[in-house]
Length: 285
Image (cartoon, rainbow, N blue to C red; front, top):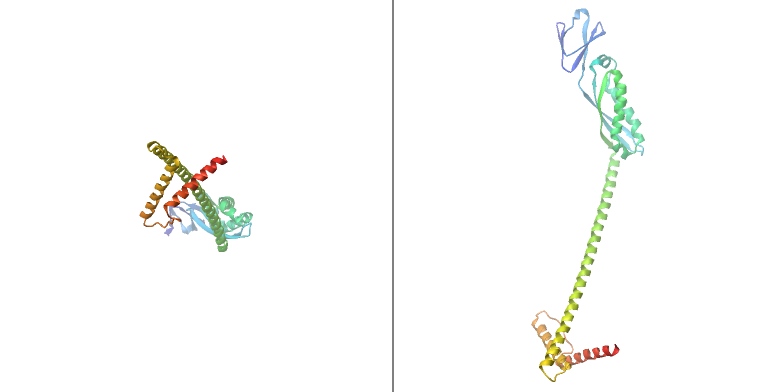
């Protein structure tokens, strides 16, 4: 606001309060105005109509006895049509607003536990706004917005909350890891069982093929060589397989197999034992 030779200039977004001999006279809008100071008129001051912000830090206690610092951000402005009340009724607007914020927060937060304070911060902000709106409207101010911008528990409480959260996450991770290991063991066991089943089928088919081959060999040899018995053919086949096995063992450089006793006569003994076993089985049946 400038003043020279009885004229003043009121800036945009502000209003000027004028007095005549110390008594309220008028509210001047933005622009140039004439104030004849010789008639006792003067500008008592200016009032900003812009939105202002006040950050209030309030320490209080929750229902579960945890001290927290609640930071509230109050956005307010003076009303042009109530400029007289806004200028004269309050000597310290910011201190007045802060007192109301303290009163509401310290009445609301002690009813809630710490977790609920975080969850219901919008309800706290709404309660503060309603109380401020009701109180400050009598003084020519409008509450534009009220925000709870931060809730700060004690440092030890925050550390404990983080540890609880970390422990819960570790427990979930351990359960997931155990479940994964369980699935792997099940799949490994299923694979092992399937492998053994297929291996058993392979051994059974191999033995069946050996039996079929021996039978066909005995029948073919008996037909082509008259006068031979099945026993002679079986002895010859066993001797042939014996020498084939000895040949394969000798051809392998990493073989560590030992046959005791060693000699062609042992094959006849083995054949006799197999034959006697088959005869005993048939006799038992």
